[in-house]
Image 1 (cartoon, rainbow, N blue to C red):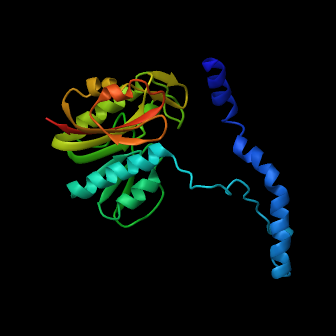
Image 2: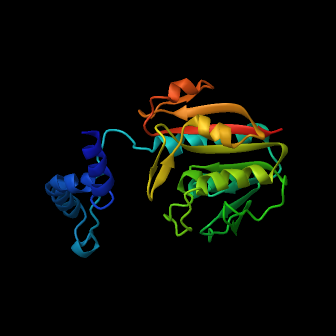
Length: 249
């Protein structure tokens, strides 16, 4: 049963959005609303300009728990640490644009960001071969990135060891006493080619031998956020999000 559900989710959802299909039932309401609007403002809202948004009439604001909570998590840590310069590799650009308002920031991405914003510098780079010297970075983040490396999703080369090469590179450029903010999916370890990998938190810890874990937070399968160093709480996860704050010895 689990296999059938996984196949349906992984092979149907990428091509068909059920929420958009279901929203067709709201078309009659859309045309009634359009008619009412036109009666109150004749000549406006021409048919050629209509743009139905039929899936937004819901009872609460939707959000992705992983990206919402990890952005809040790293923003609070950076506000406390107040680094003179922060380097981010591949994280959400929506988050990066906000962080750069109060932390001078260099953003490195395989697909370079073509945007200009005060406080933000964007450079092209590969997380498995970063354009920085050994032990040169004092404040570094990479959120929801390493799980994608080597799977070809973003045009990068296929490499079954890509995620571990990325971790090694983050470790290499981190200065002694510096901070690394890292997040990745956690739960039952597996490769969901070509979307992402899922790791056990212990795997991440074992790979970064020269780093010390300072704090750990997670989002569980139900989308709840918790600060806790108890990895046992994550053992039953299928697709949670682990947020690791490391420092280098």
